[in-house]
Every structure is written in C-alpha cells, then in structure tokens.
Image (cartoon, rainbow, N blue to C red; front, side, top):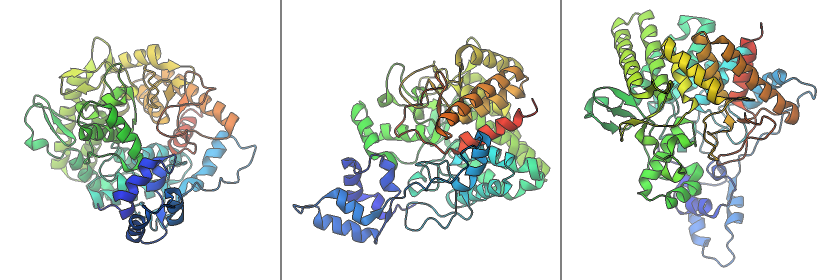
Length: 496
C-alpha cells in the first residue's frame, strides 16, 4: 500500500537519522497536524534557514501518540484481578485512527500495551487464550473479524495494523485463534473464517510450483523435492519504525545493504527480533541471515494450519480440499523430520537451506512441533529431556542457551514460548514437567508483579528478581500476551 507522505522522503529521513525521538517508532506513529504534503513543503523551504530547529519543527507539526493514562485499579488487587481489569484499558476502538499510520479496522482490538498500540498478529492468539478465560469472547471474535478483514484486504495478516507493517506477516496463528472461539461455540464458529484461512495459506505458499530444487521464492523453499517455508519481507530497505538502527547494522556488515535489510525484516516477521538464532556462530546482528533458514517453528505452525484446515473442510462438506490439506500436512511433517530433527542430539533445529545443514543453535522453537502435534512420542520425550537438562531455570524456560544481549536469547523468557511448551508437553503426557514449567513461570510473573504492580513483556528466568534486558527499546509493560498466558495457565492448573 502507499505510505503516508510523512513516512517517506527527506523529512522522514532527517527526523530518523537525527534521532529526534529516542524511539524510532515514535515518529512513524505520530499524527500530522496539517496536510502531510504541506508540512513536507514547509520543511524544504525552511530547513536551510539559520534559525531552523528540527526538533521544534516536528513538535509544531506532529502530535505524538502517547501512552494512555494508567487505569485506576485497586491497590490490593491480585495479579489475576489486575489482568482481568486491564482488558478494557488495552482495548482500542477502531475510530481511534484518524490521520496516523494506523490502518482502520472494523472492530475493537486488544493491544499489547506500552509502545505497542496496534493489533499484533501472533501476540493476539496468546492474548485470546486469556480473553477466553475472562469470558471475553466478544473480543476474541473481534480479533478474528479483524484478521479476516486484513486477509481480504492484503491477502495475509500483516505484522500489525500500521502502514509500515504491510510488507510482512508474523507466525501464522490465525487458525489457533479460531480454535479458541470454536472451543466455546462449536464448529459453526469456524465457517466465517475458512475462506480467509485458505487465502492466508496461499500467501505463505506463493511461488511453490515454480521452484527448482534448492531454490526459494518469497516464503517458499524447495529442497530436493519437498517444499518448506522461511520468513521473508517484500521490502529490502530499513524498517520505518527502526530506521537508524537498521542503517547502523548495515554499516557494520560486509555485504550489500539490501540483503542485510531483508534479513532484518525476515527476522522481524518471525517475532524473534532479535536472537542469535539468526546470526553466524559467535557473531552479532551484522551477520543476520534469517532468509537462509527454514525455521522449525514456522513449519510446525503451517503443519498445524494444514491439519486444522483438513479437518474443518471435511466437516463443512469439502472432501477434496480436506484431502489436499491432509496431504500437505503429511508431506510437511516428513520434511520437518528429515531436515530439522536431529536424532543424535534429540532436538529440533532450524535448517540452513543454503548450506544444506542444520544449525547448532538450541532454541525453544523446538517446542513448536510438540505444540501442534507434529512430533512422535519418542521425539517429544527427547525434547522434554533436553528442556529439563538445558533450558529449565529458576524462573522458567530460557529462550536459547546463548547470552548475546539480544532480547530473544538467554536469560530471557517469553510468555508465548512457555504456553507452547506447557501445551506441547501435556499433549505427549509429560504432565509433571509441564506443570513445573507453568509453576516457575507464574511464580516469576507474580514476583515481578508484587514488586512493580505490572505485567511485563519478558522476564529474566535465570534471575527472576532482575529486570529483563536486550532489544531495541525499553522493557514494556501491559502486557497482552503475558496477561493472556498467565490467565490461561492459572485456569489450566486451578483444580490442582
């Protein structure tokens, strides 16, 4: 789509390179106070004036979309009460979009919180699990209707409803969010979303029929017969919301800038932005090569999508489509086993298709095949053993075994990965380890809540008393998926 004028051109570049705002995302979320083209013309006319001050110019011509005032909550609230009371505070009305880079939506939506004031794709599934526990199925349905609307408009669900996010998606969990609603309302809840889900699947598989062995197009990679998927972005330029950070990374790299920018963006599509998972061993973000990897979690999610679509199309009287998705899922599972499963190490790893070998990075992405039911009993048992041996820390599961300073690395733990681990372990009968993971994670949530009165985006699981670090921005609170997973885990283990 065409970007708003203030997101392109000389004014945009001047503001971002100068660092007018500490957070690059702030400017791209501002609301122009006049016609953007008029503002740009005025900038060009005045920028060479002796008394021109860029900070003052921006302040006069743009309104910053600031944080909402904190809600008035009871001081003696429990963590669970706090989360339930926050849903309305985190919910945005679709009318709150005028003039900014926000993409209008048809229904209300729940945001993560903090600097994230949009409907984020994969966040929303984990948030929906908590909304269901809170009996807020009205908001779950709104999320799904917004997803369907975005797919109808763009052919996929963008990272979030911002203009600058429309060149990439996020982990495909639309179908899991449909599952949340279907658990309450039955199979009829699926019907309105089937066409949108099928269209989203075509987006992920675009170009598959035209690939030679060991080649790739957009998000599809053909190996020696089998087609698996990778993360991608349709643009090879600095991200609007992290412009100066991306330019700085490209300046450090020893390859074409466009390649670096594409790999940065592809890693962002994964949701793991950023992690040593995407880097060369012992190197930093300048070595990022996300487009060269077949990620185990992405392909597990797509396997799960294909399995669910096969069931849903069969239930709605479309046996031909059901058979097609069933065959796709079976082929994907075989390829996932062949390329990503390491029998000697008893764990799943990403596959670097450009060098035709598995990586050596131990990450919690390995729980995704358990989460969707793509692992065998033997594989699940081996993964469970490795989780206990290598990943389980005082405060939960560490995201990787590498301390790189990036936020999706040790010692940080994240709510979505804990949810997938718990559900996946339970699915294969590893109930004791699942309960231990849930208990340690919730204890970390409670400890930090008791200290700060906040639910946080991520946590230090090796030292639960410390504040988690890493990333391109300050630690955020709110926080949608942490809230959702906390409520879902509390509900899951309430009887015990």
